Amino acid sequence: MGGGGSVKEVQSKTELDKIVADGSPAILHFWASWCEASKHMDQVFSHLSTDFPHAHFLRVEAEEQPEISELHSVSAVPYFVFFKEGKAVDTLEGADPSSLANKVAKIAGSITPGDPAAPASLGMAAGPSVLEAIQELSRENGAPQVSSSGLDDRLTKRLQQLVSSHPVLLFMKGTPEEPKCGFSQKVVDILKKEKVKFGSFDILTDNEVREGLKKFSNWPTYPQLYCKGELLGGCDIVITMHESGELTDVFKDHGVGVSDSLETKPNKTAGGKGGISEQSGLSTALTTRLAGLINSSPVMLFMKGTVDEPRCGFSRKVVDILKQEKVEFETFDILSDDEVRQGLKVYSNWSSYPQLYIKGELIGGSDIVLEMQKSGEFRKVLTEKGIHQKVSLEDRLKNLLNSSPVMLFMKGTPDSPRCGFSSKVVNALKEEGVDFGSFDILSDEEVRQGLKTFSNWPTYPQLYYKGELVGGCDIILELHSGGELKSTLSE
Image 1 (spheres, one colour):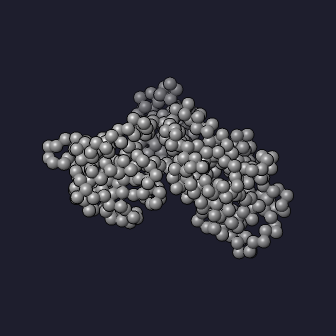
Image 2 (spheres, helix red, strand yellow):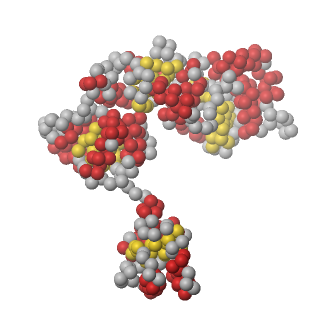
Image 3 (cartoon, rainbow, N blue to C red):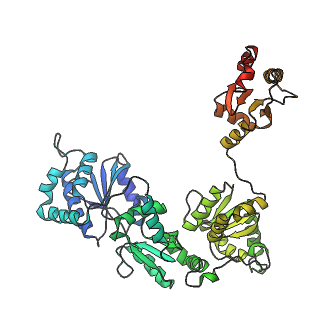
């Protein structure tokens, strides 16, 4: 590869990995046949390959290689990824020939030693027709700008209003009548097959929305499909949900196409707790398996994806709520097991996911959990079921340190010290007439080891006053013999 102005068409991720792995500079151009800017930049790209014969110049048609596009979070074309020593080191989005030439020169080196960066040669190589077309594109469109900071309140409010403006809303490239990318076309076709009324927003017409929504939704590509203000996912997830029937269930569950008053709730009279039907028709083996999974943790969430990587907005919402409530919980990824995915719908008489269970009883899906949290009912249910907030070790230590103005962490108790150093500190405090609390570090290994790190003090006993470390045995005895202990503990 390299040399002669050649640009290689990459046909697979395996092929790309092999080329990049040799460590030579490589530039990958994601393009689309329908995009005029992409075609013009491809001509510039080809000319640059002549100027830099020792680098790999690679091309990928973004819609034909979704695996590679997803890997590099490609959401628009033209888009360039720059590799050096086997790693992606830079990217460029948009029709900006000068920036492209500079970035190529940066990783591939000048044309000859001592030459300036490539834009000077670009003019000679590309020819006036290409440069004129690129300059015109730049005047009309500008290069997309991605904000490096967080979203401001104004944009956040605008995006919230947009995602909630229709029960079903598709952020896409183009319009339903004229989609501008294959992924958007596929989702439009699916929504038409589902016979669902939906709104759409063409992200190609508004760069602020286009870039802002990626951060707002924590989803880097388009299209993005929302239902009742919550992200369902992109093209692949929508296809999977449609093929399994899950998409129909989600729309039904969230009242899309029917009156909101008909929104599905757990069937409390179906003959079992939490809407569990006694006449489910499921095999005994599957029924036993589902019951075991539901009861495998006091708080159990059946979701799409994992806690670290939720695969739909509704699942992410419930995970966030459980984290906010500081609840310990387990999860099951229903995308990994179709028997559980389909069987649990029948078992629970609940047609969509996520599903949250507490002590074996179905609480509901994301809408109900969110509603319960807002009203305070969710915390009440957790308390009634004996589910307590998870306390971090740091918070636990702080609570212990502040449980008494004077607090002694020792081996044993004041009445029965288990080491001579602890006994000496107890006697000194008693002789000074100081009231103090104590904690036996022999009774709790987590506290014993954790406090050493927290206080940066490796031994016991440790004496604290108003949450601050005073010291160990030697320091306490020195303060006591000098008549300073009581005053130190009463400042």
